[in-house]
Amino acid sequence: LSLVADEIMQQEIRPLLAVDIIEQLHRQFALLSGGRGKDGAPIITFPEYSGFSEVPEEDFLNVVTYLTSIPSLDAASIGFIIIIDRRKDKWSSVKASLSRIAGAFPGNLQLVLVLRPSRFFQRTIADIGIKLHKDDFKMKIVMLNSLSDLHGYVDKSQLTQEFGGSLEYSHSQWIHHRTAIENFALTVKTTAQLLQRFGMELAETELPNDVQSTKDLLTAHTDKHNNLKDELKLALRQGSTLFTCIKDQAAKSENHKLNPDEMENQTTVERLLAQLDETENAFEQFWSTHHLKLEQCLQLRHFEQDFREVKVSLDTLMDSLKGLSDTGDCVARVEHLLKELKALEEKAQSTLEKAQLHAMHGDQLIQSNHYAVDSIRPKCVELRRVCDDFSNEAKKKSDVLSKALHIHMGIEKVNQWCESGIFLLASQAVDKCQSQEGAESALTDIEHFLESAEKNHVTELRNLHKQYEVVLSEDIKGNILKALKRLEDVQEMFEKRHVSLKRLSAKQTRPIQPVAPRPESSPKRPTQKNPTRTSGGQQPLARKLSDNSNSNKQPSESDPNNKKKNIRKTKGGIKILYLTVTWF
Image (cartoon, rainbow, N blue to C red):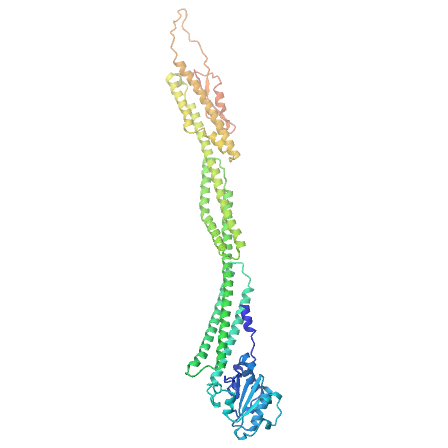
């Protein structure tokens, strides 16, 4: 864009425009009719003009300088032909005209053809009697007596009607064309300058760092581009209209053809239109690149803003996840933690999806050759990493909590079984077990309860302990060991009860031996001290249930059918009930 504009602005700047000397041109003391000499030399005509001598020197010089600047450089380099019509004037006017032209003509002069006054046919150039400013000017002057003499130097087709020629010329139309062409040339130059300044403004623009500023800049630049685009369209329309007017001039009559000057006008307009078209193409190409960069900048700022928002949400979720405990002291607590984890995962789902979509959007920007690839790619990687970290951490916590839930459910199952077992042991009355039926019934209850441990997978806690030991906390491990110890203690108590009931059952099945009474003495029932066994009462897990088995070994002084209840208090204030049963 800059090169095209520079080329337009560095073109030769004409010192004068038709609009600057419009009044002087309308006087018609000098004309550029468009005719050419036999070798293509441009013809400037000085028609009969009564006030020629009264034309100010500045006006004369401006008009002559302007007329000589119009033909192309190639035509002007051949040299100009000047036709001076003084047929109705005085001989003195001839001398004055030649003197003024010789002193002020700025162009390369080839020939001066003078139609001299008809009353002075015998006068020659030698009779002028004046000293010309240029010695070679005198050598180029040809005095002509008639139009036929003129036709010997210039073809009639290149002369206007007043010189007996066929060249059509309208001075008002000539002025109109000249002002229109020069106005269009100025429009092209001004438009090129506007585009160049706008291009420099765009090139020097620093891209904003936030969404709103980028939007504002994009809107401002787009509005300026559209305004300049309208200026370009207007200039192109102006040039096209002018080109059509010049071209259609030849169609007014069958014999009319564009004269060389009109052809040059048409060529000039074509050249200006081509420059304008080239300028527009270069400008659109530059704008397309700049506009794309602004749009990509806006995409980047949106991406960065969304990235920050998503990243804050992800970090908040990650903090919540890390703050969620992965251990609990009971089933209810672990189940609550699992529900909280599930709720957090459900809450995070939309954010995780948004983060993944945002990373995919970043991939699309990268694939579309975005200029900020090095800034976008790390953010996509970061989003995916945080999503993976959250998912992995949530899965890890869920796994640990699920295992903890199994452990606590196993502990509760053991504790419930132990408590039920202790209650069963405590509920077996000694007096009912004295009969064979009672002993066998109690034995059956014991055996069934021991079998329930396997059916209800009470002992599975041992396997869970071994399987999950690596991921379990020390507190949970301690609770497992306590539960397993209690299980062992209760199982030991049941084994002892089982043995005792077996003995009682076997004792009741022995045959009775009849004994004859002794006559010499009344029968006496010997007093027999029966060893007593005390069934253990229900105790807390903290005492490991070991006291229950030891209490069975203590002798009792009570009656065999008597049950004695002793109540003791532990250090924690928990009441422990001991049932002392006398076994046979």
